Length: 248
Image (cartoon, rainbow, N blue to C red; front, side, top):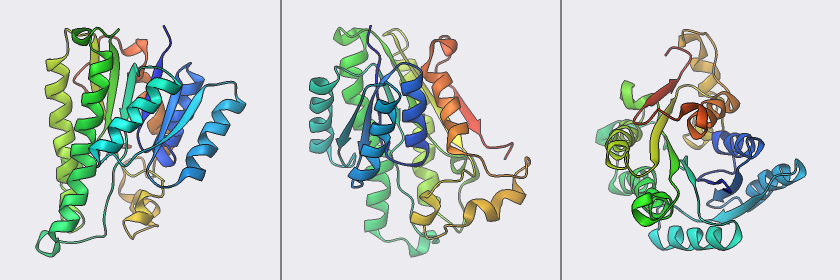
């Protein structure tokens, strides 16, 4: 059976590292991106140069119509997905809750929560044996912020990732008899450019001394955990949330 994985937010950081690792593990990879087509194509080109099969697919996961169109393109270009990594997400600049406006909150929850739900819904219609599918695996990308709360930084982001934790546990039980495993990875302080998009590009290096291992993690280290959950080595694991945090 051809194994096909969709990685949302796959053009950079953890998503890009996961795409490259998944291809090395034998998956055909759909690399989703929102706006940076060149970065997504660079990931695809790297996979293809190593003999893999990959396709760049544009969609803002916060827009249901774009998600539906993305899945149609993947169906046509690669085939129905058998694995999904819900990695696309946004942060925002440091703020207290009493400074957060409605627009910020809508962007945060539309992308991080609703986008994950809709991408998962469409994957399930293709994977689940309830719908005639062969089964599959889903890995949601949460955050250590879901445990820590993000006070005086981004409680909205932390809350959105807390929702992902609950979603993971509930969905795993819902589809456990339908051949679909659902797990999550909670990264901690990881060296990626998501910190810059939150207005704090040096956050990883500045926070490193507070990590028990005294360093930030890498995107590849998170990708390795995701790859394990996607693979057969974790065949009896569902509903799990794996911290990749250096002990934080």
